[in-house]
Length: 120
Picture 1: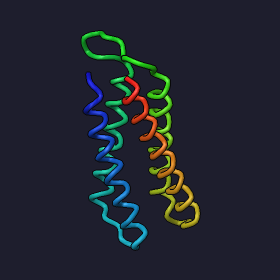
Picture 2: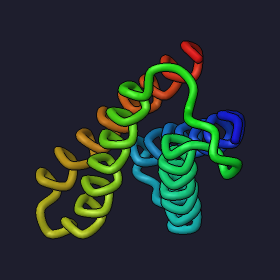
Picture 3: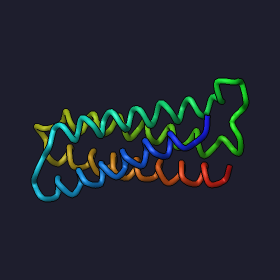
Picture 4: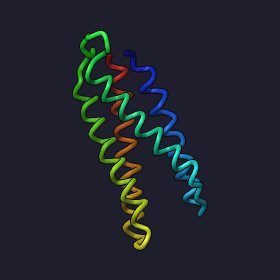
C-alpha cells in the first residue's frame, strides 16, 4: 500500500476542515459538510493505521514509523475533541476551546504525516 490514498484522504479532510473553520468564523454552519469532514477524517485515520501495519502482501512499512504513530495518535485526539465539541453546545466557551484543540491537534497530525511520508 502506498501513501497516496492516505495523503489524498487526509488532504481532503484538512482542506474541508479549513473551509468549515472559515464558515464558522462567518457564523454559518453546514451539517452536510461537517458530516463529510467527519467521514473523511475517520477514513484518513483508518488508512493511516492500515499503512502503519504494513501492506496486504506482508511487506513492512518503510522508513521511520514513529512519526506515523504519533500522527495517528494526534488524529485520534483530534477526532475525540471534535466529537465532544459538537456535543458541547450548551457551553459556547467550552465548545470553542475544544474546537481550537481539534484544529490545532489535527493540523499538527497532518504536518507529521507530511513529514513521515516525505521521509520514506
